[in-house]
Image (cartoon, rainbow, N blue to C red; front, side):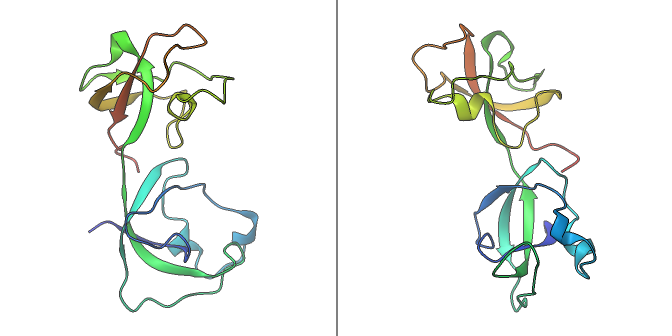
Length: 150
């Protein structure tokens, strides 16, 4: 069984992935804080099950309320320096990229992975989606293992 948490009803579908952003200003004083704020900020999760019979609870952040689901941490797909791209290796992302129109941008700055931490490679996918890196980086597309602290 995954971690039980409360999320917005619009996200509460099996297979839905999201990056947990942590506490919002509307969370202050909420009676459901402990059930909502039990994930690791900045980590990527997937809804594995919507709890049967769970009520929709009012929420100051989610306009349609929140409901109980089970979630699991999931891998993040990213571009890393090619020379470091092998299964089991711990790597850091190559660094920020200003080229938001590049087809690889979402993998160079992936949601759910920070630049200042190491990530263990779960699998190597191969070539990134771009034809040429505008920053002259030699990159490979990989999947990171879900972190232990998620």
